Length: 327
Image (cartoon, rainbow, N blue to C red; front, side, top):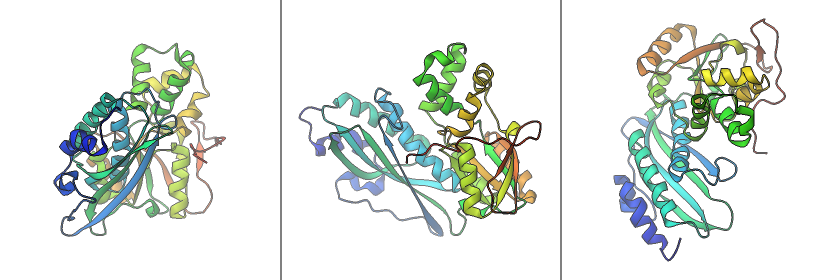
């Protein structure tokens, strides 16, 4: 990184993208007043090189992913973005050009999602690079969409398509397994891993019509189980109704084992939503107007057992593991 100081780094790369509450990044803290009648929603995710992204990923993509996984959490709670804090741990010898590109990507995405930088910290590390974002959002008082709100009889939906990012990671790790895919399909899977697309356009629909919500970050099968366990209910999930992209279908057609990868691999950052039957039509219409596909994949049922996953023939399918786990 050369002779640039921490103060110079902040002033040169991050102060230009900071929001008004950041006090020009010249203080030890930010100062922010939530809108009247709103609750604060806070979330935090950390990304580590070699675990959540590749060390040679473009710096702009690393910045986008670090911010977007947090915006996804806000969307799942029905929240509007308010701002974010950034902690950046950089390895010894990182090039100034890397930081410049990271900040450029971060600033562009902050503007896109309406979530300004408020402050944070930059440090040097002897280990891999680490990016940690704390995102703040707001919901009208009492309107947060909790993970714990699923009730027996609720319909369960998921946005977008599932499994693309997990397959994209495998295509990155083992390119030969995906050599039979078209260039367009490979690019789609790789892009979904590198650049998740948070479903912020659904936030208002969730708080108006959903009883529960969470984002799918660790794998659909495991995340469904987490939400149901937190709510104290079970569910029947129809695997044939889970939406897949054409690229994912092509990959699975070449290697059937990749279906389990798609269902359990994670990094989807789609929204898992439960809604009472009398709210389902309004939720689906709001999603249509927002331009976000929303698929009905099952129903919640009474009971504390794990969810039941069935195939097209109605037979139960059991997965070796439900989701990615760090521990």
